[in-house]
Length: 299
Image (cartoon, rainbow, N blue to C red):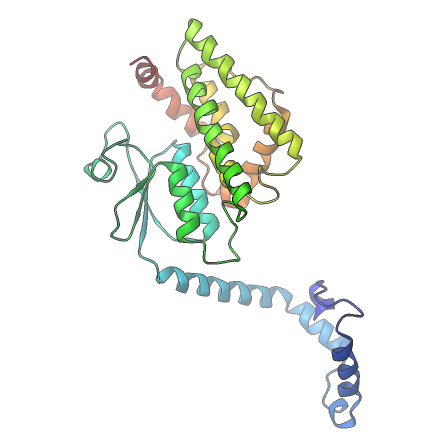
């Protein structure tokens, strides 16, 4: 079976007592008469390799669905073009949590949104069973990690180690407050105000780029996606469409190479790709709302 699948679970020399017993077993005359030919076994398992994989995948999916059925229903209130809602979509997908997506028009907010998020009146909003809503994207991502973290086979959104967990929270918060805030202002302002926010954005992008370059990792936390990666999704997929729509170039081509390398890794991740909005539709969305966004930042 190992030869057919190309997987080596038990190396030569491991478990010597079991190997001695195996030799004794297959040497028994009665047993030998019932053993199938080795090469025919290899051929059989090799010929059925994909079938067995599909069967195992189906079993695991059924197990996951059964586990999820034990949880109350999950609804995610989102809106087209929102990178903050995208964060939660990726978190739920990574954890294998089925959910109902409720799309909002933020220019014409529904009673449902105002009821469940009366303070910020925005998305994302997570509804889990009959409990009150959970709002603010990074808070929701942490809730998803804690509420649906029982499956050890699912990737972790935050590290288990307290120090690493605190560090991940720090950089996620840094992206939100030190980069995305001034970036948004730099896109929809002009003159001295634009220059000030653009300078602040680039200074903090340089810090983040150096942090990523120093770690020399695929993602911020290592080889797997984590909370810092989903926090930075705006920089990976939304930045260029927003700049094009705004007619402003805050970040030039070639700047921040470590972040650009990370952005390619992030947007090519299979789970992430399923939740990414179409680039041209993003450009059209931000262009259509340019005047509204400009008015909002000046208010």
